[in-house]
Amino acid sequence: MSKHVVKIERVLDMESSRNLKGELVHLLDTGVREVELDFSVTESVDSSGLGKLLLFNEKFREAGGSIKVINVSNQDVAEMFRLLNLDKLIAIQYIN
Image 1: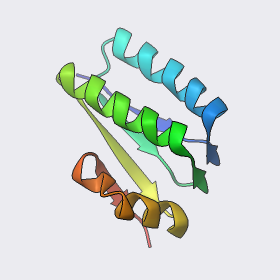
Image 2: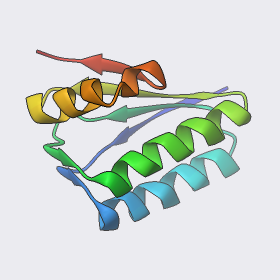
Image 3: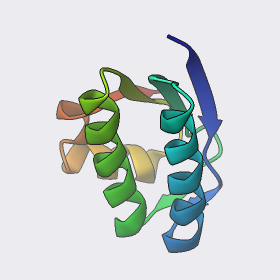
Image 4: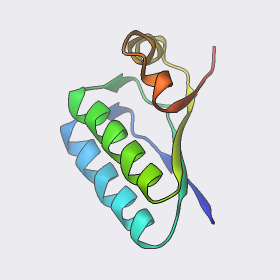
């Protein structure tokens, strides 16, 4: 089982989440089951971005894999994830 790191853009919105969806579908189709989503430069996530995270968390779990969110350094993004209890559904690594 191979692991792949995907660098998330500065803003995860409707347009960039469409790009993320395409990349994650491709990874699933090519047999990747472990994905780390690198949020080190991400400053904003909207509802479409959150939706993609939840959707693909489920798709990777169904395929026997997992998604992990890493390097969350933006405090606004980290606080939103915590308020939504996203870390109860997806493994999230925060950086202070």
